[in-house]
Length: 214
Image (tube, rainbow, N blue to C red; front, side, top):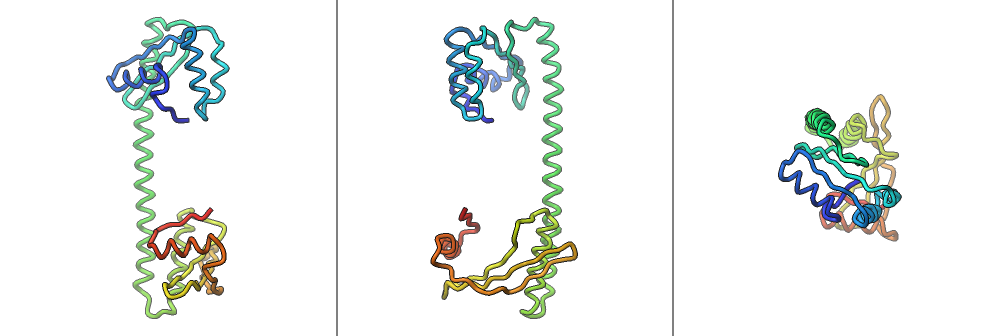
């Protein structure tokens, strides 16, 4: 889950220690303050089980900090210096692991973007090769095929063509197989008499890029 780092002194102190680039943050959870901490945490939607610890013996929160965050522990007694040293070393390795994870994540995002751009270029090429309006179906079918190759596979694909002079929309339905795609005109629909249709048409008139009716 996610935490507001201002809702209890333990969290706000931890955040300040991290900002000041300290190595270790220690906070004793004792008596009423311990109860207040766990009661506060229980109010966070993703931490609803934490209140059960309010009646546990007094203990200490230890957080071993690194550039991107911290490795936290709760223990009945403060750690001896030797144990702190070991945990600090593991924290350094975890920091390295996290940075490597971020690097891989960025590399994957760049590779994905390159794949998308290649798909767009194929669609652009198909569009530039059109010689007549009859080629529209084949060109739009290419769009749906490329979307499917990118892993975007909704239950249904379709295209609606709207105009400002009428609420009557022309509907095309796409069928996509492993061999390719096909787009066929299936009819028309009047963009009224239902909130989804009316809102969709109004969003189009207002030049909104997307609409999520449900």
